[in-house]
Length: 238
Image 1 (cartoon, rainbow, N blue to C red):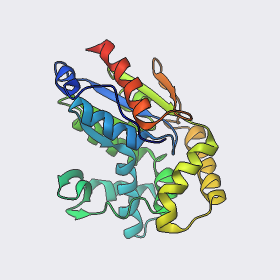
Image 2: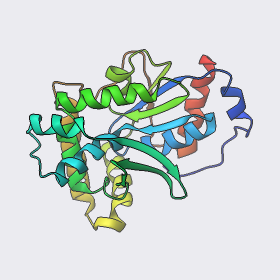
Image 3: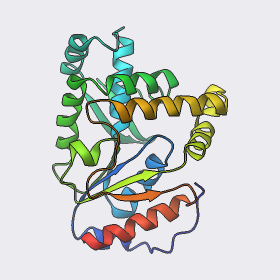
């Protein structure tokens, strides 16, 4: 997606502040969820929560502890002593794990695949389910993830499912990773396909559109085109 000028005016934030909602945005990797969710939250004056980063945070902690992805007892003990929180500072929104800023570690391709694997573990999902619902207690939040509307917030006020063609998603992800990892577009696309299959076919909280969700295909839309479309739907709930 490319950026474009939005027709919405700056008083949009005040308009939506009249009612605080819980908004979920689910979808596969590379669909544009992170960028769109951040901008949507900013436009609404809401908090933004990247739930995928939380799973990546658990993965970073698991790798640091030398845990096997199938060691559920070890993962349970890890979660019992894990404090994950988002903090806004001069560097922007950062993810901290037990007082350490791990934002720079969570996009590592190895962490991406490990996060996908451990996200299927009930002990990890239970830990993050409680944390995510705590974050939503005051409402006025945009949650980005893969099972936000299906499992974590089935009664969310507005639920979106954002998708795009696999090739376009791979190109977007490749642009994100190329400067850091030098991965080829072919490898990025294979990794995306493998993660899509893992997340869609896992027995626990598979990736799928939530009942009553609004489907948006971002393949041929700009960033602000998606945001404005979402805002037009949010308007109906104000």
